[in-house]
Image (cartoon, rainbow, N blue to C red):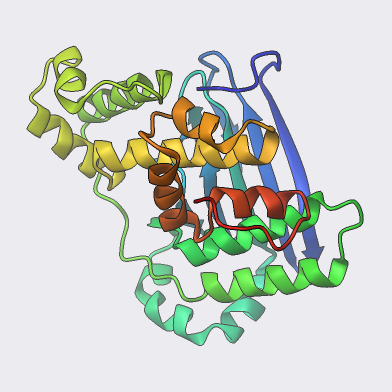
Length: 298
């Protein structure tokens, strides 16, 4: 699945905006082998929005699976978190983080968010997992497109960042996910690795379950318990996040990308893409290249 065959394990951090106790950063990791776990200390309030790849965050005996389009919301944490990667894949995520003062200022402007999560925020530390709605992904796409411009407008960047913050204020995190037994989690991680090896011709649920010596129904339950997603839904978002990257980073024809990722037709691919990103593949590519007025894909 990884596209960066000639790049060693590395991390690239781009600051999109940084002002008034707020920083918005894009963090990309390029991994090609089974990298050793790394540790990070998260000292401020933040939302971490996965755009591509899969990461595992371990904290306080709990493991959180960050698949594409997932959002991890966290408070300042006393102990470092342990990070692992899905072997052989790259990862891309956006970090929106605040200073203590900046966080309090944002909460005062988002009273609904504070009210919805009052109980959760009282049970410090806060580590909660949710799903990014299409509107959030669309604003992030536009923010990244602006950042790629030859002369990005600081005002436009600030406006898009403000819209992103407003949308984040409308999110709802119910509770911490249930802890999964280690054997169950290892089985799901092995299944994710199988699926990521070849997104164009992935194994069926029956083949996947057979390879892991469990029943398809059990594997389905394991996946939902550990990730909140069915295997089919996980495969779909992995394919679409890879398509997102290929559209942004290559000049491959859209039909070629659709075929490479196993879609039966360009129309099928475009429909699935629009459901997640609220735009067509052609519109995303046009935005990333600073073009406007593009026609639909079909």
